[in-house]
Image (cartoon, rainbow, N blue to C red; front, side, top):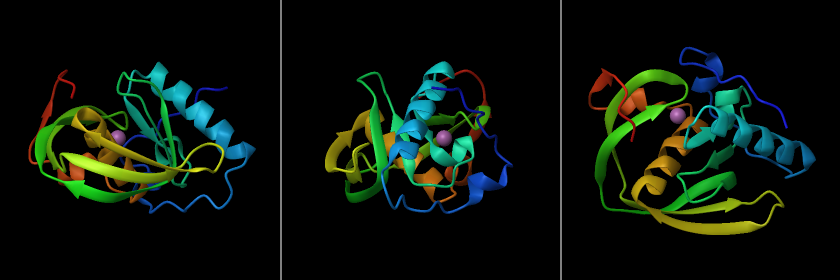
Length: 154
Ligand code: NI
């Protein structure tokens, strides 16, 4: 495993719409491993592939309940509405209020290419929506209602 460099806002790759993974092979499993290591080292709760310079639809998340790996994730159901503070490893020291769906259902492939579903609410639902936005080239600062500097974390 190796630590990857986290791209910061302004890097062109963060504005790209990412390509789907066509084959979930060893190179994807290595990317997943490296992304998880990089996320834990940076003390983040989620990381999307474009944040490490790879314009593919791969995401890792751990909101404190174990690592979840997503390949080609798609939100197939959303419900309700919730507003809370978000930050991002690509946007150091900036936080903002973002409105998201309160509950989402996601369809994705796991690291072996097997189709999975996950229903989430709370912080996990928020994190999923934040990371999937990265795959569309969208940062939370593009949609946040207010931005402020500081230490508060969602
Ligand atoms: Ni982010």
